[in-house]
Image (tube, rainbow, N blue to C red; front, side, top):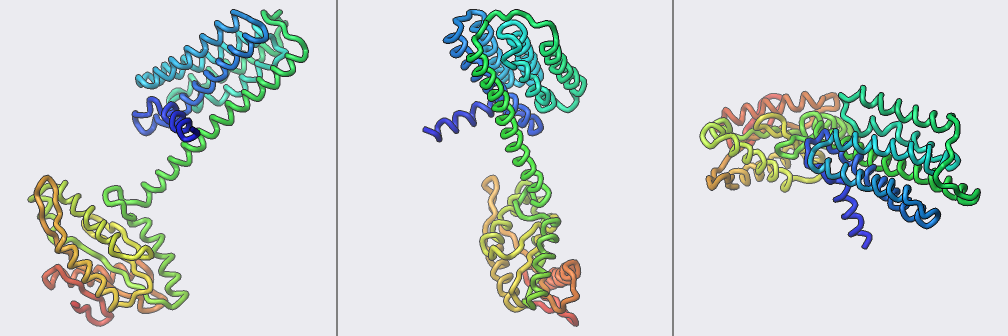
Length: 369
């Protein structure tokens, strides 16, 4: 039951979210406000109907309910600005009429304008700054007018006890609106922050770490290896004749090759190993707690598996090979960039020796293994 309600709420809040990424957050907050206002309107219809049997109040709240649902429909039709302006102006008008003429100032309904102050800035697009200022100023003006002008005899008169109950209810509802909007805003903010972090540290094509993340994580792993005097190897992988693949079969086939090789690396290496797309058709590997001989054996197995794995796209299957250059941490003064330079030299040797092989970097002489 709870799961069904949660799914229903999620789908309702996301109505109209099939738009550009920049607009999704504002659509969700708008829908949240519209549905909370609709719930408040329904509560008011029941509450005031039971207490006062007021036709005016019923008509007002039915009107607000209709407008809120219309705003959601406008979001669905991608008429975002119109939907948000209709919603905001309707809620401002509803609170003004409600507090000024229907129930009077004693219930504190006018305090809800404080809740509305940040909403234009949350709902409207960044370039609507003038509109945001005008709407915020309108909320302030409405509050001060109701709070300090000559009191108007309200249409509905409640006893002192009912006034106290309704005032508390009005304040709680205003708090509820702020809490719900804050939760929605915070969830979306966290989601987009995580997405930005992912974009900043992950290669979008292969899903592997990019060079920035590789260097950050690699320096941490290197420092650990130095501190504990553990072996560590760094390797570079280059897909052989990758330009020919792109030229002959198209870039889509080339992209598929990169994705498949990335999956092979991920599935055949340890979780503690760092794998990254170094650039173009190059991949970088950092293998902690592995000496040069062990690294060479691991890379040769990877090389053989890459050569045997068919890469298919649009019913065309090809096989690729890869060359590897690998080096190891030799002294505690070495930096990660120096190790990558050594791996790059070894990779250059592997290419000169016919490709589809693993070459190791030695301080005196790189040798093919």
